[in-house]
Amino acid sequence: MTPPPTAPRLARVVAEVFAPAVLVSVVTIAISLASSPTVPAGLLWAVVSAGFCAGFPIWFLARGARAGRWDTHHVRDRKDRLLPLSVALGSVLVGLVLLLAGGAPAVLTGLVLTMLVCLALATVVTRWWKISLHAAIAAGTVAITALTFGSWWWAGFAVVAVVGWSRVVTGDHTVAQVIGGAALGAAFGGGLYSLFL
Image 1 (cartoon, rainbow, N blue to C red):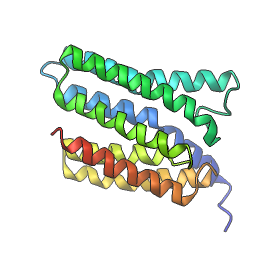
Image 2 (cartoon, helix red, strand yellow; image 1 turned 45 degrees about the horizontal axis):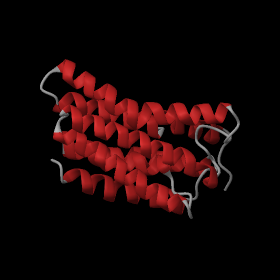
Image 3 (cartoon, rainbow, N blue to C red; image 1 turned 30 degrees about the vertical axis):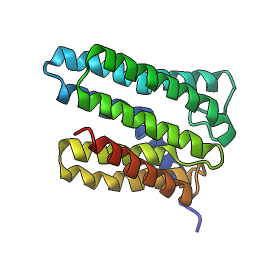
């Protein structure tokens, strides 16, 4: 069945609104502020964690897309994803080291370590299969948010389903790739992060 003409346009909007960099920024800022003893400290940790986990990686992606190294900041070709994923791994690792050295709250360093592990797993899988990072990060964000702020946030998996739909409708992923991404994000993201609470 062919999707209605507005579906691809709506799917692209959903993919941008719930893009990995957006969700990573939101969850790191929220947990930085919630776990810090003062607002200034929370803002400092928010800048460090969001900057290294989302800011620098998306800058690198956008720069590469403008230079023609890959088609868009979503990097549709699986083989082209390995370099930006490796750069993102390095950036998150630097952020984690800075947080640990600066004495950031344990729950925040646990969050960033969780992101590092999940990103490493996704990078390994990407060598052979184009797993959906949108779905992985959306599912991980919902699990982490629910574990941190309350069980009613589990309802956010409705958003994960919409994000998955958007990636299939745009032709960027198969249903299996979306399900695989969501499973990785929920299981490893939520499971590992829960150890730091």
